[in-house]
Length: 55
Image (cartoon, rainbow, N blue to C red; front, side, top):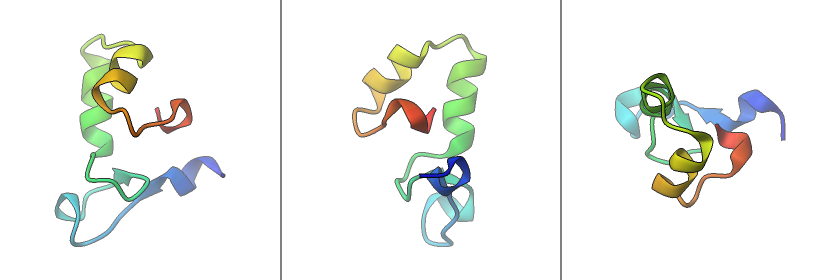
């Protein structure tokens, strides 16, 4: 899977904002967690449906 195929935009999910693999988890939410110092392991623990490549 190509990197940008993991980021999707759908009008009926996340208010039309970019999300990860058609899930209702916004790209901005993940970026905010990382900016606040969360580790990849923490993000994966918070979102068990994520794969490491999603981060």
